[in-house]
Amino acid sequence: MLVARTIHALRTALAEKRSAGRVGLVPTMGNLHDGHLALVTAAADECRTTVASIFVNPLQFGAGEDFEDYPRTFDADAAQLERHGVDILFAPGVDEVYPDGRADTVVVAVPGLSGLLCGADRPGHFDGVATVVTKLLNMVTPDRAYFGEKDWQQLVVIRTMARALNMTTDIIGVPTVRAADGLALSSRNQYLSQDERRVAAQLHRTLIDIREAVASGERDFSALENQGCSALASAGFEVDYVAVRDAETLAEPRDDGRALRVLAAARLGRARLIDNLRLVTG
Image (cartoon, rainbow, N blue to C red; front, top):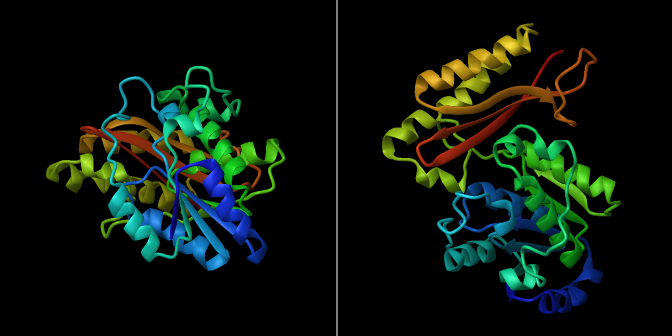
């Protein structure tokens, strides 16, 4: 596995490989777990060349968030990526990604979507995500890029951005990887204490309850959202939201047969946890 620290080194390496077939990209911030590795496996299965990136993107962290404390485990991450078939690891520094400085960089924004749900609680977060993903797609120019479905809003934002900017990369969603008790895997799960970790699986169970209610014919989504918030609060969460939304647009659902998703975000101690499930309405 080649480790490229600069855009020039990355593009030089890719120039030798691109003619061999499809190039896949897996963007990460490192501190890898099995959820990340599922993305790598999907890319390696479908692409001739797999590129993974590790870059803790300062633009998507708000004031008071954990940018400085975000776990950085480069050597262990690189070893895992090599074992899982990554051909090129792109690990740029902040100055390589933002050569004009963070304050003066051009920012990519996705109107509407970026201010909903997690965007309402983390202002500017999705602008930072859209900006760095645009940069990575321009740097790598992959045929496919792989993102986890755990952060469904992020996936919708990136798909919308790629379509609006006429990008040729296919944005591929990969199903959420979970622990045995249903908790979605996340680098931030390590912030949970032992007691909090036992409680954390209630987030997934609450979404399952909503999914089962909808499958049984319940259509009072507002009531289900309120019930979900109450259940999480009773379990000890500080709830940001529980929301039933159109799966493609994140708009409030209409009675038009479109696919739906239930999404939630809630805090336990230092950890902000997110999850979502597809709803079956027919």
